[in-house]
Length: 197
Ligand SMILES: [Zn+2]
Image (cartoon, rainbow, N blue to C red; front, side, top):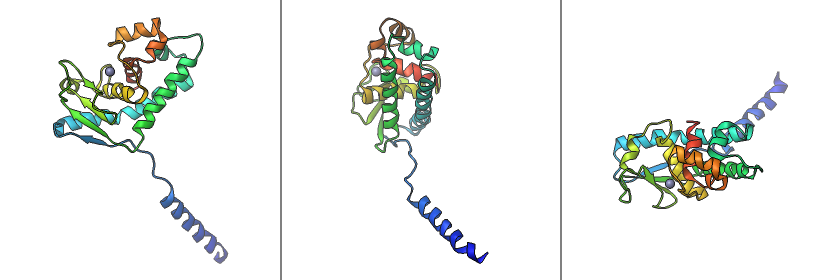
């Protein structure tokens, strides 16, 4: 057994060394909160934010495994070439990469720029997510959910989506009638990803 001792110790040493030196696992960008966020608001945003990365991962995996799945066609339409799906996939990946980056987001609560009935907006800067009063009454899953609204704003920041139209019926119609617009519309990304919450 003596002969095995040195190699065993060496192996242990190498394992410990590799463990200490391997890069830290990716984790979600942190959240900062402005002074208007109460602890209840912080909790509601934090719970929602935790669901954004898993939803994006599932949304990307769906496109990878079945790009003509009903859920993909419902929100991003059907086209003669599959270029539009390649674009959607790349956009989702860009959104995911931002969430996996080390740059934190600052959550603003009850921003001055909110209009009546707004859930959130993206005008304060690329590292800000500005929530409005109505945001905090929204659910954790389903359409117009708190995680989905964060993903909507994130799509404005990261892949330059527009608000061409709002609402599920209208977004669905857009996917049928105008694929290039559907894949530029923030709500289409939101509703697609809310399927995976
Ligand atoms: Zn928007």
